[in-house]
Image (spheres, helix red, strand yellow):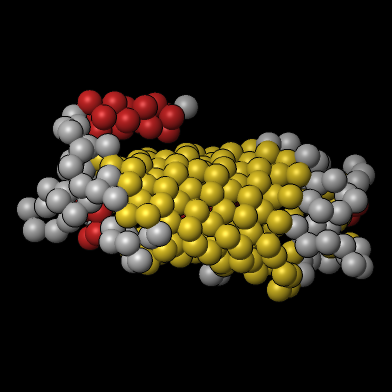
Length: 261
């Protein structure tokens, strides 16, 4: 796939052109006199998203997205990372509609797996702050939209959405480890575990099971940033954990390549 080749080219360029690591504080400044780690707050991506599910055929597409971050390197400093993956997903949906294609499978089944209006936020606190290493636990919060629309029969009138499904607010622990590998090349590795509470139900196709346990979500990922070239990229894996009897399961993988400023 083109997006994966771009990711490989990106890694080759930034690693091959890197000098010895110094420190976050002494990172070479841009022509405007700014530290890339602190002042490059926006990231724009070309993204390949793949969603797999226990009851719906896997699907994927190429989209665009953006991320906002506030980073700091002193011990005790706070850091904030935010994105709304559904904004990029909308490009895929609109693109299919323009081409006259359906957003559901031939049997009427469909998988929804993204964020809502608020998106996904992580706030971190630097508890370890060395010249080339930051360890930052924190909290994750925001919202999810999740639903598995199954085709129970041969017509669309038979399709059903079973639990776990809905619009959920979430919160939970998160952790980010940041390592500086060269003058302006750093890598973020992160994970989070989100507990949810349902904030809204779905369409008339939804069949609610009273007392059904709310889903949890687990995420694991890494990103690479190169301040000198302004290039950035990464991979994020998000998994829905069904805690009830319906045994649903779904995962979302996002591979991104872009630039930051």
